[in-house]
Image (cartoon, rainbow, N blue to C red; front, side, top):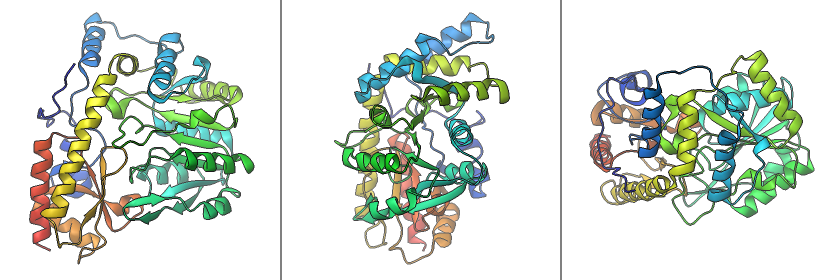
Length: 390
């Protein structure tokens, strides 16, 4: 099936965070948004068809996830997409990735534990660590020529005194796909010091280069303290349907996770549409994923040409990331501070692009390119007006 990612769909009036609530983030209402990381693309046709079937059934009662159809969809996806074989027994439902991380923090340790995480980082990690009574231990990634790398000497110094390593793989916001060698070293050091690894792999479908995603689950036979949290929602643009999953090889932790979800947090029943969207997406829509990656790659190339030509001499640098639909744009050479850049973008360009300080890096912008190319081109023209005003 061929998908038309150029199609423009008006999301106004749908209570959409990115469009209807843009003022909450930028203080202005009439902005073109490239902010929160969902996309402006329709979910794939098989998912929409299945949801129509579910809606037309007319009964939306309590539903369960603990069956081979749900768990088999996840296991089959990992086998086909990432070449990793997992047991169906390892798979559990969760309402969200961040819920899973918070619950695993409580199951794997206690308040005051130190959590190692790479910086810059997905902004919600700051909250899920600190608001659950943990101490955030940031390890700043080293940028070399637009590519971020791990300082493994510093990694070892820090990880030995931490209770958990929270990994974002691929990495948001830099777009790094960790290599097999990097994963080997991270897991080996965590195993050496007995530190559990929680790996958030929600962006693992959108790979833009020849890199290959190396899932933490590939190490489950080597280390018994690896835990994956993920969702199909970024891939198929279904976060509003609610639903994610964990893959927890450790039986005791898995049973305690399910018990906590059911008996303490009272999240017994799966979201019916969210469950069906994931099962159908993973089972029938890998052609959509391949075409999505091609389209996002084209958007990244378009932005790269724009920065190198239209913003030449402005001090802006951009390297196409290895993954995600999030462009991480370097502003460190711009002759203006981040506040002035944001002011020009919002009030001159009328465009909403996330400031890097949200993710722990002052001199960057994070721009969501999960959109039709016409929207991107309009956004780039607005960026140009903003930078001309600086």
